[in-house]
Length: 209
Image (cartoon, rainbow, N blue to C red; front, side, top):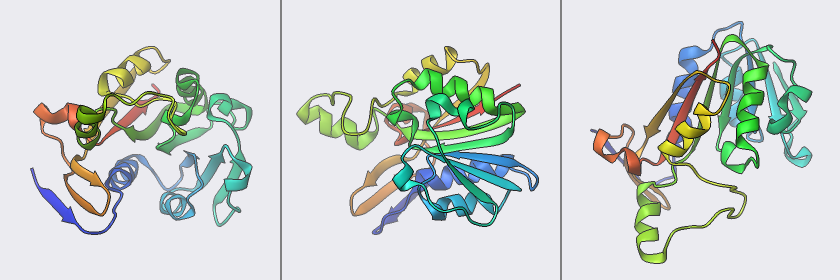
């Protein structure tokens, strides 16, 4: 297990998601990004595919189209109203599913728009991440909804959600173990088996067969 020490902010969860995306994407792929208000990240994804569609819930956060990227206003829970069913090769979403009121409907809508053989890569905070568990030891368990988060997931929670969905093949991967937040980051990108419960994030890979 290799630890990283950084005195500046780095989004290791995004870097992990991007590396996973690179394993699946092809130059002729049509890619969907759900929650696409950060142009720099969208650009990182769009460089590797033929066509990129960004779906953003809030119209005031929707960027202008550029290069091979087209932005749409839409709700993940009703994705097939703005995205043609079975038209997407790869879908990506970072820190969105925890905001969605009906998460099961959102996952099933993702299944609808993916082509057969399509892949989705998502990430979300782990409900029992190390720093949150330490804080709650002293303050008590956080209650949801809180702020914009409708909920947060443990690995078990996420597996139960996916078991109830239309996807039959998926992986839930705990990523980033250690202190990840504030001015100093001390963490391992890989998570030892015995510390899965305390991983910083969950990365989810969904496969439409």
